[in-house]
Image (tube, rainbow, N blue to C red; front, side, top):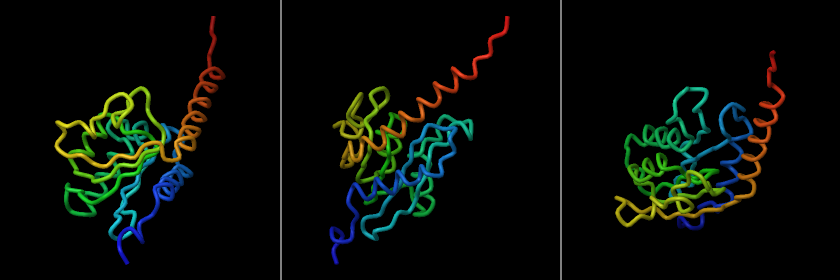
Length: 167
């Protein structure tokens, strides 16, 4: 059986990534990431954003998943692996993707403010970048976008409801 036969579709992988958000902590922005090995057809690492819980601006889902996969593989070189994330990677995450030599990136919603995989910047396909992963954006984008919109709607509502007016 060749790797094309056993490898999951982009949509199947994104659904697994979205499933990580079912147990999400409700404090951090709901973004999830997976690292998938198409050769073995195994997901080797998964993570959700932990910025607020860890009080660390580098605790993005993609960074955490890359760290986990590197430890599991006992190597910072993740060539041949695929990163799946619910939101287009930011500049920091794109840098980690390039440095880890991940071969393929699949993401859901586009990030019009901080995206670094085609919307605001395109670091992953920049000719000056040290590696050039295959990039597939917009996979189940509406599902990812809806989760983010619901989160921010809830945040705005809570801010309005929690206004303490003292005279």
